[in-house]
Length: 340
Image (cartoon, rainbow, N blue to C red; front, side):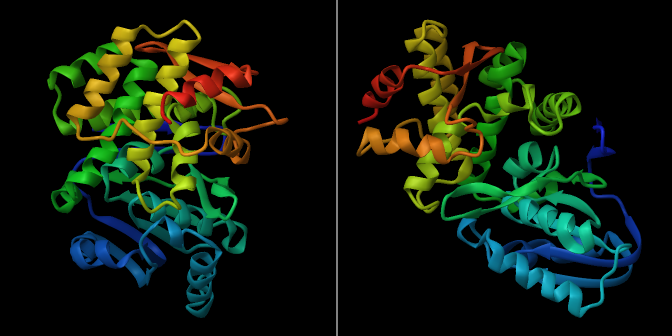
C-alpha cells in the first residue's frame, strides 16, 4: 500500500508494508529511545545499508521533548562530522518523530530525514505531514517548524510489542479522522469491519489529502485539531504525566462534541455514537475540571490561538466539520461546567 503526499515544498511516499531494504549512501543517524532501540533496532539495521551508521538514543516521554534533548542530539551529529548530505531516521513514536524532524530542519539549516514510526498514533498522525517541534513550559509543540520527510515507512510489525494503552491512543486519531471527514469510514470502524492496515491506510489517505491542500495549517489542516484544543489543556494541566496524547485527544473530542451540541449542531445520538466508539477502544471519555476559569485561560496558551481568539473545531455531524471562532465565553464555560 502506498499513499503519496504532494505539498508545495516536497513530494514523497508513505509506504504501508513490510520494511523494505533502505539504502542511504551517506552518513546516517538513527534517533530513537531506549525502549524502541531495545525491542527493534536490529530489525531496522538489518534493513538498512548506509555508508556510516550512528545511533542516538534520547530519553522517552513528553517531558524530554525539549531543547536539552535537541542539543544533545545536535552535539552528537557535530561530533560525528555530519554534513548537509547526511540523513536522520526518526525511529519511535510521536515524541521521537517530532524531535528528529525538528533537529533535521535546523541542523546546518536543513538535512534529509526519514520517518519510521513505531506506534499506531505516530503511524496515522505525527509521521505524516511534516509538523515538527518541542515543548516548553508554556505548552506543547510551541517551538518547531513545518519540515517534510523524504519518506515514511509504516510497518505494523512494530505494533506487535505496543502496549494496549498505546494502541488505543492511536485509535483516537483514527476515529478523529473518520468523524471529521468520512462517515462511511466511521461506520466501518464502529462495526469492526476493517483490518488494521485498512484503517491505517484510510487515515493516512485522509491526512495526506488535507496536507496536500494546506501544508502550513492556514485553513483546512486546522480541522485535524478536533479534540486537540481541549486535549492540549488537559495534557498541560496534568503535566503530560496522566494521559497519553491520544487519550487526552479522546476526552477533548467528547468536550468538543458537547460544545457542538450546545451550539445546536451535533445531535445527542451522534455524540453518544462517537463516545461509544471511543469507549469500545478503551479510551477515556471523562475528565474532572477543578477550575473552569483556569481551564478556559489555558486555551490562550495554545499555538492555534491567534489575536487572542480561540478557534474550536467541532463536528457539525459525523463526517462533516465546522470551524468556530469568537464563541461567547459563557457558552464555553457552560460546556466546561459539565465536566466539573
